Image 1 (cartoon, rainbow, N blue to C red):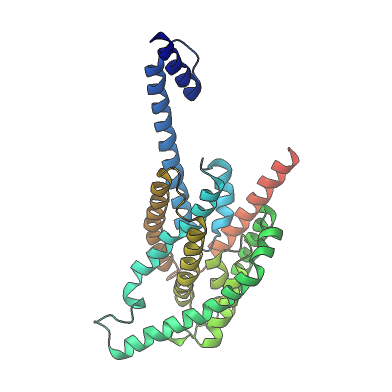
Image 2: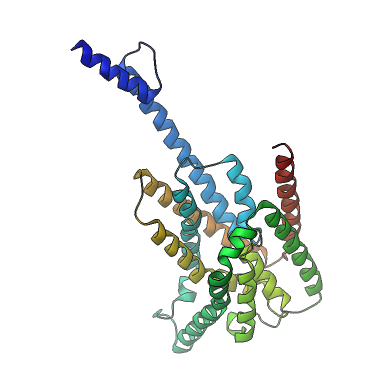
Length: 316
């Protein structure tokens, strides 16, 4: 019996990194409490990441630029495969916010719509598909090249600053111009295709998908801020749904431990809730303001990213 107790104690000591005489039961109890604290810390990290995702996905300030800073302070203690999948699939919560907020506008089968309105909704979806084509082509042809050559903090910092300057320049140019396109139905096929090209350019880290498409719409001239922002939201639906589904398919069902399922769902729920707030804020904000404030913010953030990683590299 004594020999058995010694073996249990040895196992407990090994698992809990304990080598005192407190006893196996006490050591295991402390280990469980320690693990519980670790789980709560992971939950807190996921909540923070969900908040960052929800805000930065829709405001034109680059989610990548913020996440590379946040990830210096907050790193999930999960496998690399799960973390990479999590960072993409969490966007599913953000895109569901668009679907919920604009469900009536996006639903061509709504019984409350007239036949003309249903036809216009179908036309809107056709424009969304057309606008998505450049990003699909670019993703197939350029994704590996961009990931291998441009996925670094300095590119992120540069693109933050470049697009920040573009926002300021374009908005200053548009101050004396009256937009001609004030409704989604007024967007031409040529315009949505060109906006799609700008969305493709957002593959470069730090550009911001919403930032690139809004800049593109405003740069083309004649598109109102409200239409530019809404069409940006709608363009995200097929792109982000597709990216989330592909990443989840590649990851499979290899959730180990099962706690990872909870973390992923929690991240999506937080991202969804915060996205609803961010989208409503942005649409209300641009009714009386332009995008120059976001441009200045991007420039400041770009400088911070450049200095942070530049100084970090000097002291390595």
